[in-house]
Length: 68
Image 1 (cartoon, one colour):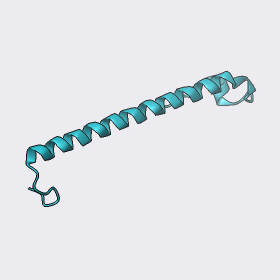
Image 2: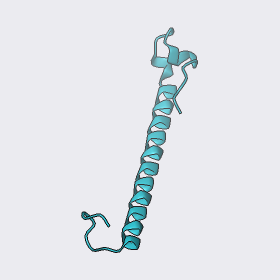
Image 3: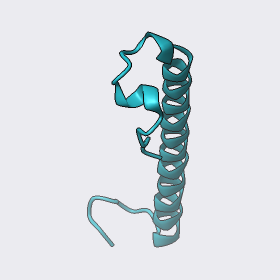
Image 4: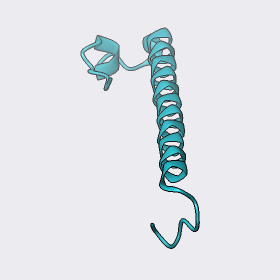
């Protein structure tokens, strides 16, 4: 057993590691969803105000490719 873990049994240690992985997955999933939401919101704002962009701007033509 690892000295940093102390006197805990391996099953308890494994359960804790599994729980931490799940928490990281939940947080990373939340952050990915937040990024997608913000990106979608930015696309809507650009589309809404595209008429204010110069005529030769790539976002106005719609040919600009957004990252997904």
